[in-house]
Amino acid sequence: MNYDVIIIGAGPGGIFSAYELAKKSDLKVAVFETGHPLEKRKCPIDGKKIKTCIGCKPCSIMNGFGGAGAFSDGKYNITNDFGGTLYEYIGKEKALELMNYVDEINVKYGGAGTAMYSTAGTSLKKICMQNKLNLLSASVRHLGTDINYVVLENLYNELKELVEFRFDTPVEKLERNEDGTYTVYAKGEAYTCEKCIISVGRSGSKWLETVCTDMQIPTKSNRVDIGVRVEIPAAIFSHITDELYESKIVYRTEKFEDNVRTFCMNPHGIVVNENTNGIITVNGHSFEDPERKTDNTNFALLVSKHFSEPFKDSNGYGESIARLSNMLGGGVIVQRFGDLERGRRSTEKRIAECTTRPTLAATPGDLSLVLPKRILDGIIEMIHALDKIAPGTANDDTLLYGVEVKFYNMEVDVDSRLETRYPGLFVIGDGSGVTHSLSHASASGVYVADEIIGL
Ligand SMILES: Cc1cc2nc3c(=O)[nH]c(=O)nc-3n(C[C@H](O)[C@H](O)[C@H](O)COP(=O)(O)OP(=O)(O)OC[C@H]3O[C@@H](n4cnc5c(N)ncnc54)[C@H](O)[C@@H]3O)c2cc1C
Image 1 (cartoon, rainbow, N blue to C red):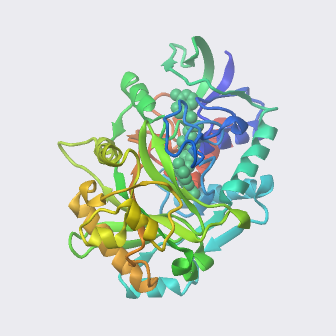
Image 2 (cartoon, rainbow, N blue to C red; image 1 turned 30 degrees about the horizontal axis):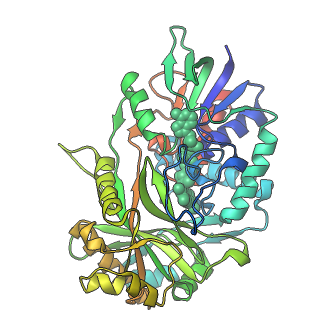
């Protein structure tokens, strides 16, 4: 046996499994990772010479130590209300306990001094309710992109002495051997292990799909969330973001009774490109460092789409919409809310005259040519609903970037140990379809490691 445990993927799920195994057992552990070590992860977009995504392989935003979370805003939401359905497998209390445990580790490894926000006791809940909006309950630790990086750096420096990291080593194939052990194939070599934890995130979804098909591990199709990223002057939302930092607000549309929700709020942040399997979508983050704060706040407005028979490919649907925006805009499209409502495209001139200064160089265009009417109508209704609790949200100069798509991995059939039908083969994090966030993915990593150690 080469290793007791092989972890595939060094995102938050894989890192926290490695951390727990390293700290609480003598097991020989290796982590295989497609991407680079943290210090070598550099996205070439500099806004000058390289303005948009050039499709690096591997993508430094999505792959490498820290996974998709490495350059994220580092918002660790401690809640069962959103961010995944881990609690359905391990229970609500355990899920919260593990998210708090992860928070303690983040604080210990560099996050001390960062703020923890909470919706408990806020008067905003009532104001939201009075305006047909539902503010979800959560506590959130905001590390910020910079401190998040420091935490990852500190964790790596400690773990590299205890765990073998194999970077730039994508796992190509996984096999179960007759004696119940596993063989992992990467870079033309074979490595064996007693137990295997798959934590490949969203970027590994296609690969994981082939593993599940080959090994006949049942899966279920999941949802896809489609929408836009809204960018407004920070002052408009400051009474909300100063108190809560991130608020998850849900609105039920009058027209179609669809749920539209805010997602990933970044006060004084920037809007960025995201590359998922070659498709350019939009995302956002912000820095803790006051020097790097902008005058804008951004957040996503998303509508969930679930499909029933006969269509199952919800990710394929989201991908087609994102491809359409890539086809029309060469990447992400930006449009003024006023232009959208007037049924006209935004142009370079209109964006140049806009009082909200865009933080991402995107192509001015028309989102109504990209987003399905039902989704677009829902987003417009939600912007007007938000305008009641944050006047100015529905201003003509509010910027909308599209499209933002949240792809969810198909849900892999795992039991209450997050173990597949094969003993010793675990699937965790966003790759499992069970989690969709830093805190849930990390908690699932700790949970499985504890199951393996027998704690
Ligand atoms: C820009 C951005 C901002 C975000 N902001 C937030 C936020 O503020 N709060 C929040 O909760 N969530 C945020 N998210 C989501 C969050 O990053 C993910 O939920 C989280 O990283 C999931 O962790 P994971 O370990 O499951 O997967 P990932 O972080 O995706 O890690 C999976 C790792 O597996 C590797 N891998 C894939 N396939 C293979 C293979 N075959 N062999 C070897 N390695 C492989 C990948 O390279 C990757 O490094 C953000 C995401 C992005 C992209």
